[in-house]
Image (cartoon, rainbow, N blue to C red; front, side, top):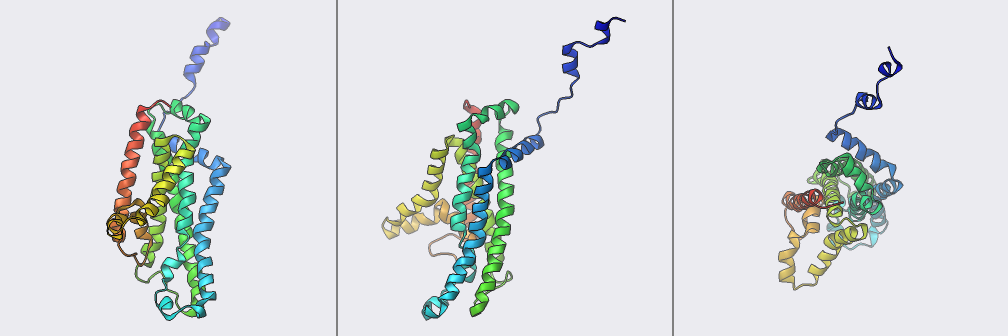
Length: 278
């Protein structure tokens, strides 16, 4: 037998190499690897955890240190649950910025081309980014919210204004905080996909969640009060509050509206992700 016959050709050897199909599970694994390979991701998530778990405890400590200086009305209006979860206002900034960056960063570096070449159908890449980021965000923020609540209530025992998880609306507020931050992260991934630019995506997120409520607040009160409950920020944070603010939707109704805003944005991002060149 000749050496040529005994040795398969290069083409045959290539065909003999086992090739795995592109599955959603493999795309998820790839996105998980990309997410944790970036130092900026770890720092952003750490900032969100510290803000969520630590700020409420700090606020509770400050409030207890000056308790004797508060008026009777201030003491009666004190909200132990909402105080313990006050870190959500800062944590949402870290989560939102990171949500934009995990996809807009790939556009700025050109890595998105490699991603869509490896997954020609494209949409599994977007679903994987959303799925991985949402899972990581929910787990970390749920733990952080619980730590913030328990730590703050331990401090509030000094003046006997603490409550337990069994108190009305306490568990809903703790879990709701994690849910709000998770859906916010998904919304910002979609915004990053639509804008495809880090600075533009972060500006859109900040404008939508922080600037727009300020603009509404300077409108005549009758107009502002009719618009405010339906803003994404007001609707989303309703579920995080044990004692809802005036002129806001019910907690689950507001959260459902916020999920609706997010679903529409994700649908638009998916449509454009398939149609546009990278």
